[in-house]
Length: 299
Image (cartoon, rainbow, N blue to C red; front, side):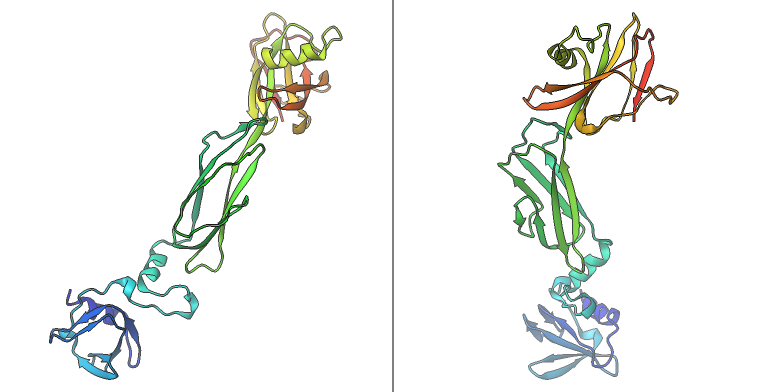
């Protein structure tokens, strides 16, 4: 380790009257040791290093210096452009890690999308950073959290609609904090399928139609109505869609992109399996189809 301090001085390109402050223990081959105090090292005119202790400068040749326990963390660093960096370790870490980045994930619940009517009672967030974080906060009433934490359990909660978790994290050597967000998402089901019965006719009550939608059609949990379905209507069947009113009215197209204007429709209220009441618009094809590949695109 005898070359460590020498290399440090040379690589620092010290000039006359430059100062490098070291903390720790600096040993010199003559047996002179400085224990746990700051050391003022200067480069003399003849290329030697001068160490100041107790107000006295000692001219020590490069070849006579050894290092016992100096680490990058114990070497102070002073640059007014990066005032938050105070030692060489922090400066090296900032250089090696490159761009400051924070990665936020919701690790629980793992369900990507909940249906309205469900309740999320606990959320676990985890995150990582390419730099040492100096301050961090989470929204939703959580506030500031210790900088050593990279995980947070938000419980008990009662989340029943789409909720955003936002982490704001400041890091050493960064003038701006990073903001990262993840969502607990809630959606609605769209329903689709076929039937030979005309459930939009006056002979069927809204209760009949609601029961048909819930039990007679397939469904997909979504946050919008965008879909592409191929129906097997052999045997002469209508195709049906039940779209949440909150999604708006879609444009229906066939496989060639032609718009299917004016599909018969009616409005009903549907209660899902979680007891949530929602308004729907039920659409039916103009007439019965008889094909293995009736394509309908919603856009």
